[in-house]
Image (cartoon, rainbow, N blue to C red; front, side, top):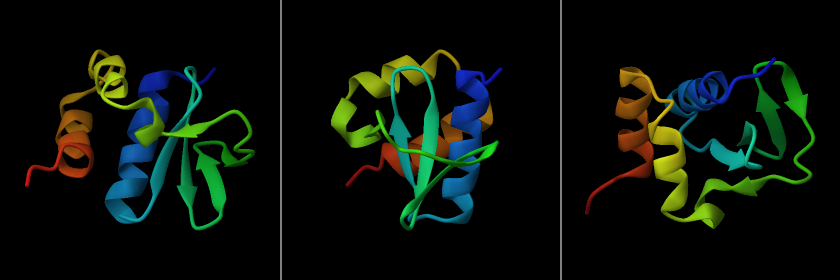
Length: 84
């Protein structure tokens, strides 16, 4: 069974290695777009039904905060809460 925390952690680790990676979410699961392919910890996935994190606006940050480890929070802030 996939847990949201594991999916998020996997995405953030991929984004840390490949900064152009993009997070996608469907209110249950997170996948990562790299180039034209979508991935999770189990391999290549179909993106049908997923939207990019940006389509969820600010609400996505609050949904994920409750399941984040300290490392996840650090990476989330690094990539998604950049200040000007």
